[in-house]
Image (cartoon, rainbow, N blue to C red):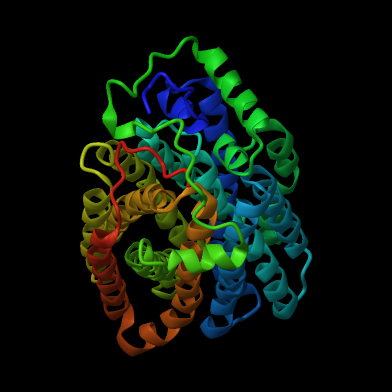
Length: 454
């Protein structure tokens, strides 16, 4: 068919310039993302505080993190399936509500067992929210800058983690029952969920795939009205061309069909490599960053000083995202992801063998820079691996497999520290980063290309 045919919703979205409505989708989703990061980051400080206040063994404390990650593994897998069935926006809002309420309730606990149960519930919401949000934003983003927009979305993680570091530094060690106040602050997402539910539009790509063409068209028209007459890019940029009149059947129409499709001949290599990368990156990231404050504390630094070091280290995340956002549309997805993973491996070894405060801070900042840049690239590439009918499912299950590693990582840290100390622990993390860097080359690189609308 020719370009004179009525453009599809997908084609029209790809032709649009980035405008105010795109910014609203990005910041609305990004604020939820930042609140997620704040919750996860707070746990690294709360664990350290509870070791001191409740006289916990490190093996007991590790279950606080792992209980949350167990919930995240289930939440990510179910959240993706639900988002492909019921829509991106609604599932996004429900996940925020679930983990916001459970986080606030955690502030009132009096013992470890109840805290573990609530952390599991928190994880259900957290795990579902992240892959759904990245899928949601990717489906609005124009193809030529889609990767960059998703890295910017992921950069909100640094904002939230920095907020958690500030709370950890100024609230937890300074205020009586500071860790309880920190958890109450983490309940903010419960209120934000209502804003998300009613303030953001549903994904037009999902609506069109579900046969709700009028709703999809109305949303795209609002984006187009704001931008004015958009010059068609399709005739000038074949990389984003889509045959508007070609109606292809969905890759899958049922939950079981979507799961089977992930391992069909077309997708099995990218699914295997994607799961490998997610597993390895989760193991190293959460093993390191959940435990950094505690590792510094057990090395003789008091709470204020170890939390202060962690705050400085955290600040390096934002420039890591900024560089990744630029490179991902210059180098492409695979090269950017693999380079940042190799940089993470080198930084991990340097941090594990650091002997002075200056080297601890410098190597920690490098680890933040490269590791969070890698996360940005990974979240950008993940939704691009699959067509619309199973995009959230594929993203959610990749994240769910990654969360298995995030369950194992906190539990692995105490025995590894006992066996070989920080040097051995961070060499193990470096090995996982290298394996992920190799696995990245099995992913499809969709830089500048239209999303698959099946």
